[in-house]
Amino acid sequence: PPVLVQAYPLSRVASMLAADRPDLRAVHSSPPPFADPNMLRSLPDDAAGGLLAGMAGLGGGGSHTRRWETAFRAAFADPVLGTLAGTDEAPATFVAPLGPSPEVITAEAATPPVDEARARLARTVGDRRLIVRVDRIELSKNILRGLWAFDELLATRPQWRGKVTMLTLAYPSRQGLADYLAYRTEVERTAERLNDAWGDGEWTPVVVDVADDLARSMAALTCYDVLLVNPVRDGLNLVAKEGPLVNATDGVLVLSREAGAFEELGKAAVGVNPFDVSGTADALDRALTMGREERAERATALRDAVLAQTAADWLDRQVEVASGLARAAG
Image 1: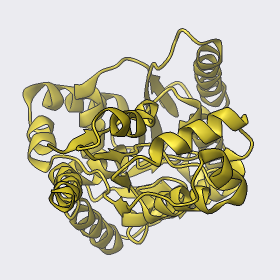
Image 2: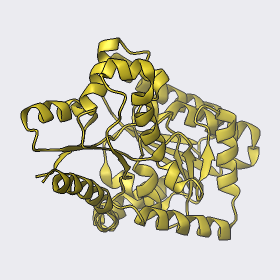
Image 3: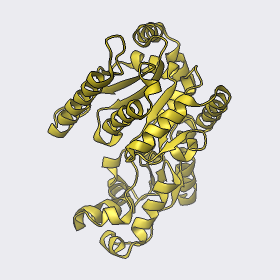
Image 4: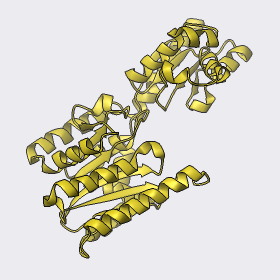
C-alpha cells in the first residue's frame, strides 16, 4: 500500500521504512517551506546530513510550490550537502498545493454561531472599513509589522482616521515558550499604543482578540474589506485561501510574496514584501481605495484560483504518485 508522510518532523521516516520494508515507497508532503542550500549549510553537519539522508529514501517528495521544490532539489545538488547526505541525487519530486475543502468551509460560514459572531462584529465596527487578519501568535506570521504598517497608514493618510478598523484575531501558540509570550505581550502593547495615539473615544483603531474562537474568525473572513496576510515566510498559508472563498464583500487580499500561496494567488492579490512596513502601508491604502469593479474582478479570480486546488486535489496527487511507485515496483 502507499505510505503518505505528512509532517516535517517525520522527514527521516522514509529511509527508516526503506530499511525495514523495501517493498514500500513513502511519499512525503512537506508543509513548511524547504530551506535553500545556504540555510541548510548553516546547520550542524549531522543535522543537515541526517535530514537529507532521511529524505533521500523517499519515493516522491511533494511541495506546496515550485519554489520549495526547487530548494529541495538544490539541497541535494549542493556539493557539501550532497556529501553529508551520502547522495547528490534527489528523490523524484512533485508539486501539490494544499487547499481548503470548499463544501466544509462554506457550510461552516453559514452556521448560526458565525451569524451571531458577525452581528457582534458589526456592532463593534459600525460603518467603518474593516481590515482583518487571522493568525496564530507566531513570530513568522509578522503581526507586529502589520500593526506598524497600520500605524503608518493613519499617520500618512489622515483621511482614514476614524474610517477604518483593524481587527487582529491572533490565537495563542506555544505559550510555554518565553519568546512567544513576549511576542504576544508586544503585540498587545503595540495595539494599545496605536489606540492611545489615534483613538478618539468613539473609534478604537485596533481591536486585538487572542481567544481561539472559530466562529469569530469565520465571521471576520466573511465580511472584511481587506485581508492582510503578511508572513515572513510560509509554506502555504490557508487563511489566504479560506478568506476569499467565504468572503461576501469583494474583499481585497494583501498577501506576502513570501507566502507559498502567492504562487497561486499573487496575480489577483496585492503583493507585499513582508519586511517593508511602508510598502505594506501603501498596499493597505491601495486596497482600501480600490474601485468596486476591480475589487469584484480580483475577488472572482481569487475564488477561481482557490477552487482549482482543493484539499481533495492535494490528497489525490499524493495517492497518484504513491500508486505509480507501487505499480513500478510491482
